[in-house]
Image 1 (cartoon, rainbow, N blue to C red):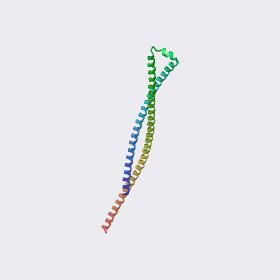
Image 2 (cartoon, one colour):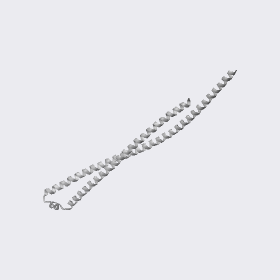
Image 3 (tube, rainbow, N blue to C red):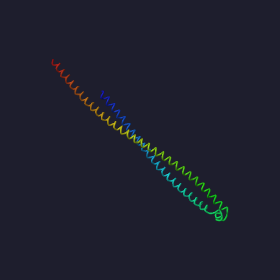
Image 4 (cartoon, one colour):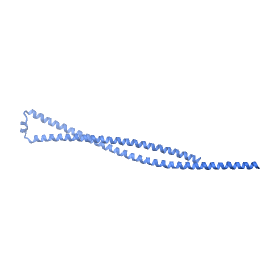
Length: 193
């Protein structure tokens, strides 16, 4: 009976270990899916950052061109600038437009720079999350390995217990058979007396 209890206890422990192993497998799959999702987010953010860099480069080129134009106009004397236009109002309109363009461009560059910085902060946070998930996956894999080792040990114990139970039953059957043979012989001897 003690062997039966040990066998049943080991079987329930093996079932528990198998459930743990299956849960760990599921956790690993979920973590791998999260890692894949995070990788896609990192790729998307890298693309967006690259796009913002291109926009910044174009804006900077536009600012540089307007500065060149402005410097060119500064190289001329005020009289030359004024004489370069048919009307004073045309000069004033162009100067106003140039000043407004530069202000808008500076604001745009500031905005795009901030967006780019925000995207980089998000990318760094996402990369940290990926590292955390990868670490979690490794820990889960270690736990899975330990669970497999425990499962193997318990399987071996169960096998040994079943072998002991089988040997015990054989020994018990042989003892019962000898007892019955002895009782039969004793009965025959008693009947002869």
